[in-house]
Amino acid sequence: AQTVTQSQPEMSVQEAETVTLSCTYDTSENNYYLFWYKQPPSRQMILVIRQEAYKQQNATENRFSVNFQKAAKSFSLKISDSQLGDTAMYFCAFMKLFGGTSYGKLTFGQGTILTVHP
Amino acid sequence: NAGVTQTPKFQVLKTGQSMTLQCAQDMNHEYMSWYRQDPGMGLRLIHYSVGAGITDQGEVPNGYNVSRSTTEDFPLRLLSAAPSQTSVYFCASRPQQGRGNTIYFGEGSWLTVV
Image (cartoon, rainbow over all chains, first blue to last red; front, side, top):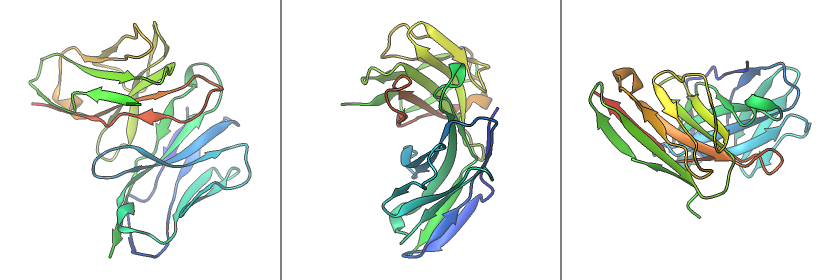
């Protein structure tokens, strides 16, 4: 079974600054996806970024980038030029890529509440 | 394109009552699942389905029933509601393996059991 751990229950950052959210995971699988989801107060689940484990290059989406360290089983999210609209709960999640009954199941971390201050 | 639609959005139940949370998707996705979100615990998988007629238990299945008679619909039934089932429930879907890895979430259903 997979586990995902987010060790920072809350983080805060000033507008326009950079913040990094941490995520570690434990798995014996070699093929998987890792995700960061954003959940604003509306509770909508919004995909921020996705990383395929077989890709060495770190994923980037505009102001969002990840630092994927497969050997260390670490998957941190960096938000550059933070904006007030980035205020939300952020979840790290793991999904096995192939195989049987595990297909498509997401395992989530506990979440990190990020507050961006003006 | 509606995506994943959950109803109702809000519901208050009395202990012991039964109800069904509806989930429908119009993307012809084979895989559908139900999660619950509780404070400090992230989302946890309740039940999932890999196609019509096929369902299986997730991490926290007790107190919930599901069925999948069509590709589009995946209802979650609470047979006898308990206060411990007060939570926010999310339905999700994704296409079959090899046809994309994006998971689509509904907007959530807030359930309070008193």
